[in-house]
Length: 241
Ligand SMILES: NC(=O)c1ccc[n+]([C@@H]2O[C@H](COP(=O)([O-])OP(=O)(O)OC[C@H]3O[C@@H](n4cnc5c(N)ncnc54)[C@H](OP(=O)(O)O)[C@@H]3O)[C@@H](O)[C@H]2O)c1
Image 1 (cartoon, rainbow, N blue to C red):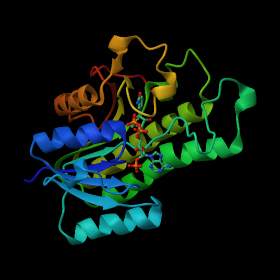
Image 2 (cartoon, protein in one colour):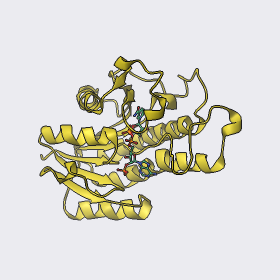
Image 3 (cartoon, rainbow, N blue to C red):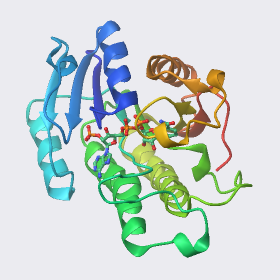
Image 4 (cartoon, protein in one colour):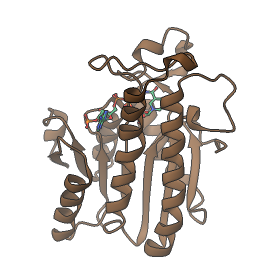
């Protein structure tokens, strides 16, 4: 079976490295981004789709189009997420007084709702003979592993993402059978998302996107597929929910 890999959020730092790695592995990559195509996405292995607005209607229409082309996905990586946005002035909260309705709405919309809509539609086009769906989550979305506090919106929206993935895994198992869903913490990766927060990160703990992509691809291939849903980190270690 052809290895069809869907990467959502294709212009991002980690997504770009994933596209490169999957191309090197000779997969057919379907890249989806809000942004126009880049040099990388002109690669012969990449089919590129710009979806400027990733709402229920547009995601649904795109997946329907893939289905009509008889495309069956073996791997999906949803990288969509944000931590800060300089245009809208959203930054992670340091204290309760920083909590803001508009910022919370933005966090949940991008980090939880958009991936949930992808999960809703993709159930119809993932391979029944061994498919894997990965959502880029974050350790700070673990409820049990939260000793530091702060970052209310980002933490809560990633925890909500984890719950969407875990809940969807029950239904995917019933409908798709040989399927595995993964919430993945990539570590701190040198991308635009982490830029303002890198100064306290030891150099050896600031990963390149290339390292991150290789780790993700290696770890998901080693997971126990009898377990439908996993929450793991860049080192393949279990993260507690
Ligand atoms: N970098 C880190 O240290 C780190 C740590 C833990 C978790 N993560 C997670 O890893 C994922 C990828 O992060 P990254 O480091 O590669 O960051 P990035 O370079 O900023 O990429 C994130 C991508 O998410 C998509 N996105 C952002 N806002 C969106 C919106 N409002 N609607 C739809 N899509 C939106 C964009 O894709 P398009 O513009 O192409 O659509 C963007 O390129 C994120 O989910 C992040 O939370 C990263």
